[in-house]
Amino acid sequence: MPHHANSPHPPAARSFLSRRRVVAVCAAAAAFALFLAAAPVAEDPSRQRAYLMGPFRGGSREETVVAGSLAGASSSSPSPAESPLSCLGEINLSGGIEPTPAPSMFLVPSPSPAENFDDGSMEEPERPEIKGNPPKDPAPFLQEPISTGLPTMSSDVNGEHDIDRKPVLPLRPEQAPLWSTAADEELIYAKKEITNAPLTSDDPDLYAPLFRNVSIFKRSYELMEKLLKVFVYHDGAKPIFHSPELKGIYASEGWFMKLMEANQNFVVRDPNRAHLFYLPYSSRQLEHNLYVPGSNTIEPLSIFVKNYIDMISAKYPYWNRTKGADHFFVACHDWGPYTTKLHDELRKNTIKALCNADLSEGIFIRGKDVSLPETFLRAPRRPLRDIGGRPVAQRTILAFFAGQMHGRVRPVLLKYWGDKDADMRIYSRLPHRITRRRNYVQHMKSSKYCICPMGYEVNSPRIVEAIYYDCVPVIIADNFVLPFDDSLNWSAFSVVVPEKDVPKLKEILLAIPESRYITLQSNVKRVQRHFLWHPNPIKYDIFHMILHSVWFSRVNQMQIN
Image (cartoon, rainbow, N blue to C red):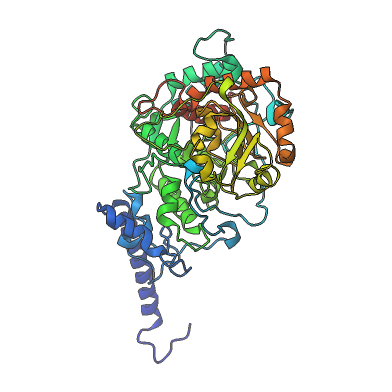
């Protein structure tokens, strides 16, 4: 380069100064990285909330500054104290603006009005409306699964399930673990034991017709109790982390978090002993703290989750060993699946326990992911309140539904059956003249069949509520993977009706013989124990069933050879 007369330094000096600048920048970057690893999080909960909400208030792209990448840092980047990722806890990330994904991936509709659940509907959150058809993830690797002994259930007409003859194959991790551990060997041992499970026919604690294969389930559950160790990440501060919400329609994720973190049988402090790693964040708290009302985008939530996983994988070696295949999270909010879209390994490899278990979106992977029951709890201190219902002879209503008319199924249900048939009590809202005599819960306790149609998404808390009130659930949601479908035989205690058959709903229900209905209703009462929350978990309850489904998924991923 020629030497200009107005340059204050000759070429050699400028070269020396450039090298000094490079060294200085590298030293500063290293010091900053050490600062990130040691920076404490503010302990004042109100300040943590301010960190979360501040950068997103207003909803403009320029204001949506999310931490996590040193690349692209600018003078407009927030200070560490302002970063929404301050709630990550031990590591306080700050930095530049994350790349913005296509807006169509994160569009959400306007908020829907809240309603009172007792008069026939529930308080519905804002739901994301994904535009277009996202590409489905092809199964890159398949292996021989543990056979449950039964084909896959798809839909139910006239009280009998149609059977999908194609077996459901669980996914292997996309790449083998970088190194093997004693925990891997225990999982391989468990898979051999489960595959060769001894026949069970007379276990007084397990009613065989409720299960796809009671022998497989019993042996798998026994091995879970004996072997399973879970490491819970301590990173992350409240409110998004370690903050269980125990009331309402998102109670499942909150109750699991509370009981998992307090568990002394499965949780270990040494991650090197763990078979599974639990990511203890709340999808409900993500929505509550990061979503900007009226912004119509859940992008901030997705970026937050991506940066959390990036932090975990940078701080610990455990994620990278399996690319997240031995990690799991539990999310009941409808947005739970969509917040994984910006992190490929989280979306494809991690075991996702989701209430919104929709096969059509290309996010929930059957055989790897877990369908989480959506439980609506009104009284956290008394989770078993009002359990049970009237005997069969006193169930005078053929079918009952009341709720908001959103989604593609419910308006059709109301069109054909709303106020048109005395046997079909279908309402958009229970009229006051009716609630004076019988409220929402009493209707479910007095009905033979409780209609459980999808809303914005495929999941509905009415399915578990029907089970709580001894009412046979009638599930109308194509592409919905039913809870615990790896273990439970839903044809024994429910009716699944394709969406296209809503106009024939009464005909379908009346075609079920009385003897068949009595069997279904009796089995509802038997299966109820597997959907109950207890402040102190008991064997085979919903907490253990969720954990078993995650365990069974992980065992199924292991290669024996």
